[in-house]
Amino acid sequence: MMSSQTLLENFDEQASSSNQPMNEEEEAAGHSSNSDERKAFEALLADANEELYEGCTSFSKLSFMLKLYHIKSICKISDKGLSMIIDLLREAFQNAKLPASLHDLKKTIQKLGLDYESIHACPNDCMLFWGEDAEREVCKVCNVSRWKGKSTEGVSEKPRKCQEEKKEDKASC
Image (cartoon, rainbow, N blue to C red; front, side):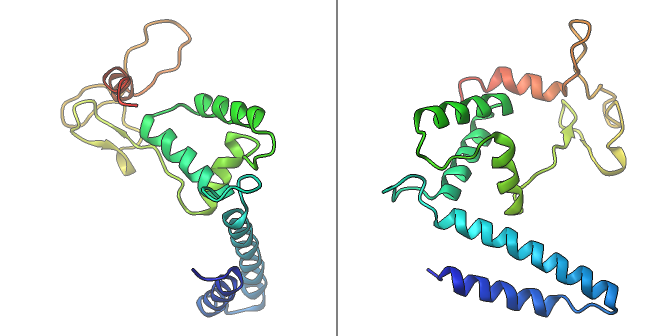
């Protein structure tokens, strides 16, 4: 495994070779951008090298956050559910270096370039509501609404497919 210093040197080499600004304004902006990227990279390296708690060899702070988010994704745990789990873990393991909140965990994940965009699909899987079709309310193939009908007043609409998947996948975790 490469040392943190070697990784930082490689990062600096790649950043300097890929950014060749044309004028002073671009050069200043490029330097600021590289500096911000380097700080973010250094923070990720620190989290990757930091023990989750004293004596822990199974997880680094970063690897534990990634594992938590992986479980959230696989088991379709809501943001509120994961927030409650993080709060419980912080209360039970006070010496562990856990993220303060789900928001902090998501910021770290985004620094890795692992964020995502949610794209709705037709309930019949005919099309994606994406690109120039992102604002459509009905499928252009089968004319089915992208939204499940409201059952009560004041409840926000969710994509129909999400509601159906929740019913089918309750036992998947």
